[in-house]
Image 1 (cartoon, rainbow, N blue to C red):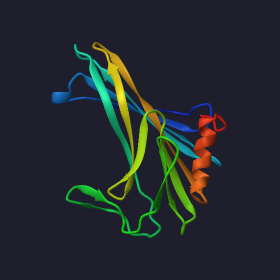
Image 2 (tube, rainbow, N blue to C red):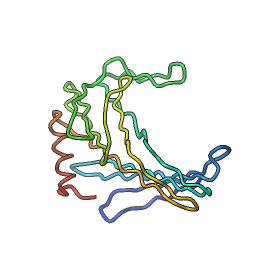
Image 3 (cartoon, rainbow, N blue to C red):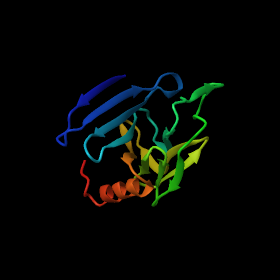
Image 4 (cartoon, rainbow, N blue to C red):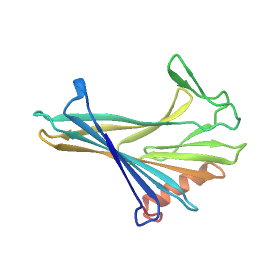
Length: 177
């Protein structure tokens, strides 16, 4: 595919990666959009758009976005049998408001709050926090698009409520894109 990089008005950076399907996925394209906002309250936004160039409508029912892990030791994760295995000491998971959760490492005094902004869930799976959207979106035939809701990640210093507070402020519009 191809990519574009931009500097939005808010001073962050955005990247759009455009991917085209091959073989059994010919006719489908995905735009993966990433935006990083620096500063005192840094965050990362990811969204996906499915573009359907086939002759039949397609329905998207779920999307697995990311797997996040935080470790207070310097032992990196490893690939075992082709799958990522997290380091032995993981940060603790704190479930948050609808569609969100926080990884916090009390020893480091830092963490990350992850949220899927519509019909999402954030859970621990195989020692990592996973963000997933579930719903139903149709991409009509001949260039129809399905806009999969965004996921937001806030990095923070402090205790778990610090990340939840950032998410609350973001959702209230007090932290702007």
